[in-house]
Amino acid sequence: MFMMFQASEPIEVFIGEFAILGLALFIVWRIVVWVREAPVRPDPWDAEVGNQLAGPDAVEVCPHCLTEQPSTAWFCQKCGSAVGPYNNLMPYVQVFSEGEVFRNGASGRFRNRPLVLTGFVLIALSSSLAFAPVILFFLLANWERRGGGTKQVGDSEHR
Ligand SMILES: [Zn+2]
Image 1 (cartoon, rainbow, N blue to C red):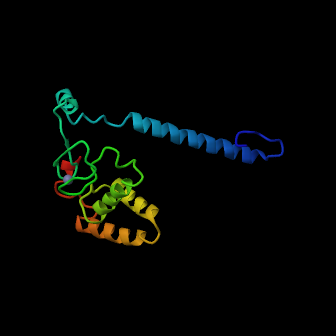
Image 2: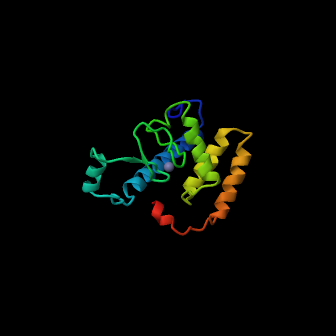
Image 3: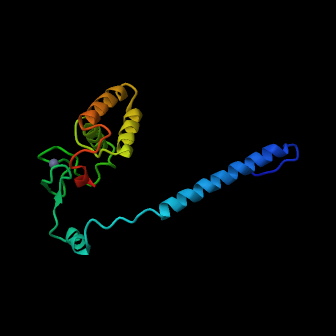
């Protein structure tokens, strides 16, 4: 095992293991410090808006086109986006949510962030080996069309 010192083990191996353990503990400590010292972002809205959202007269809207939705809707009548509360959990309907993610990456707008692009690449690679090159081609073409690595105009409105 990792920490057990065996008599047959040379002292250099023990020192090496001890150094690796120390390095791992240092990395974990640096991650904890990094998370604790991260700047706190202000709430996007105050308590009044939060209460209005939880109120009985609040209506559900499509996150894509902001059209008002009945609470029983699975898909937006106007744009076809998946709007049901359990769309990401239901085995059959989940396919449409995933398709929407692929569509947004290939032809829609998405946040121009390295983490978002990495997520699109990973989800494309995890989809299927046959379609991954096609998805990646359209994803990178869309990314290039939207300005590549440069920050796009109106990017801050999606924060
Ligand atoms: Zn819609």
